[in-house]
Length: 382
Image 1 (tube, one colour):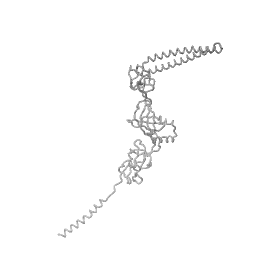
Image 2 (tube, one colour):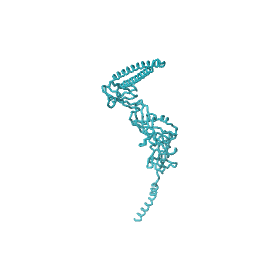
Image 3 (tube, one colour):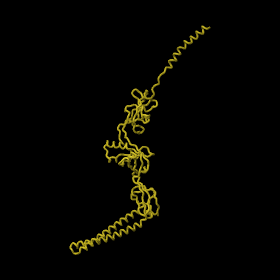
Image 4 (tube, helix red, strand yellow):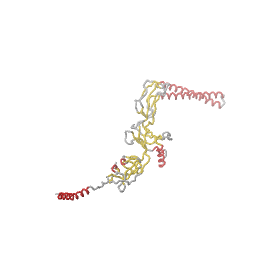
């Protein structure tokens, strides 16, 4: 009995040996394949570098219409918000008294002119007679004095006429420039222009063209001056520099204008230079006081390298890209970045034109390890 049982145990153990060997071969470790990532070479194309700022729109002209003579408001000749051309009548301030004073002054001037004509004729006669020694010198002197007094009276009368003419014109308030006339601040029949503070009748604002004002940092001023010197530009050439602006609700910079003015000195307290551009505004899309984004071209870069902005990463050292080398090993590459153009980021330094940049599958790529790169055009990886 015991011998038979022993034989069976030995036979079973010997039969299990091949099975154990088979299990050992199946559990042998096989390394996983390198992860697949999408790579692309940088896109190379010309780009324009811009200086991007913020600013505000400002009216080219804006003023209060003030009563320059006293009287009762006779007529209001516009509707609040009207667009008025230069010289368009807007208010009339009791013109009758000033018309009468003008006529009085004109009459006095005419009388003074007649007296001057008479005394001038008498002076001419006395001049001829004194030359021939027919009359005394005293008669000549008297004629000259009368002529000079008449001339003085005429000059005074003429000045009074001019003053009366001005007051009559001031009684008719007109638009000093093309613009939008704001809501009136007086009513018909109201007395204005008294001895106290000047009476504001309304305000007028010119909205076409319109300014955009902005401040440029001292560093950017030096950069712009350096670029001007490189291009051989003069101060007059600055008037041709295009400037673009966009509102908060707009995409891009749809409003096109040009540089108009820069202050002659940098503000020491802010370290900025005040400047402005001017824009056509016939559709009144820009109103004074709007906040605007400003863009000014600085230089043209004929061959810039661009990669999808999503391919960039950030760490304590700054911005970086993951690049696959010739051995398909991932490299961490620190780069200096420029502006974003249509979802593509300009790379100023740290990247070569033939580098294979990982544009998709970045999370599967570990610096120093191999990957399986799949080539794709960078422009399609945005």
